[in-house]
Amino acid sequence: MTVETLEVSSPSAGIARADAFPLALRDVEKRWGKAQPPVLEGVNLTLELGTRTWIGGRNGAGKTTLLRIAAGLIDPDHGRAQVWGRTANENRTRYQRLVSFQPAGDRGLYARLTVRRQLQFWARIAMMTPARVRPKVEETIDAFELRELADRRVDRMSMGQRQRLRIAMTFLTEPEIVLMDEPLTSLDDEGAAILDLAIEGLIARHGALLWCSPTGEHEQLEHRFDACWVLEQGRLVPA
Image (cartoon, rainbow, N blue to C red; front, side, top):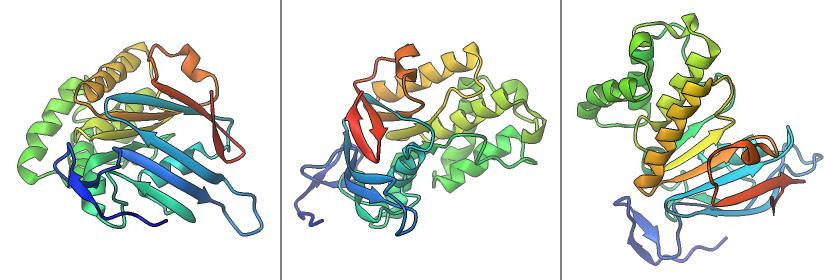
């Protein structure tokens, strides 16, 4: 797809096209093998500042694939995933600093690391400046009520405690765009309330949220989503 070169300053102090959004998927297509039907076909989606977007769909519909493309972890076969007009391949460092992705399940955790060391490691992967790492990690431990677990190894924690840690990692760097894949998995009411506060903080600082979960879940959530979609046969349709 041809991209115009007109550029303006973005709210995140980067450079973006005049028609750019915090996150935009443009004509995204993806299939796993030439003989397979497309997982995503002509997907277009934009997130605006200070908004929450929900995408549902059955298991295997392609929600996780969509999130991984949006996070810059895999490339689409066709189309673009861009943050303020730039793809991850065009500026990997900037993309990684602005976007945070919480995958489903218990991925991304190292069993032998303590909560504190896991957060420190994650801050460095996210390219946080060294001077900010220690104070921001301690602030995050308190914000997500992990103080009692701070020196406990990950493999000695419950699934719910691990999920709270993974959510803390997602918000640690104060990203502009948060991508979440079934974030309520294994969370108790207390953990869900902490997640709510983190999302409110994201929206208050004019960030954007993309939440994926099974079809119908948004009707059970207390969050008011600004846009709701369902992924069906590789395409987004209004929920």
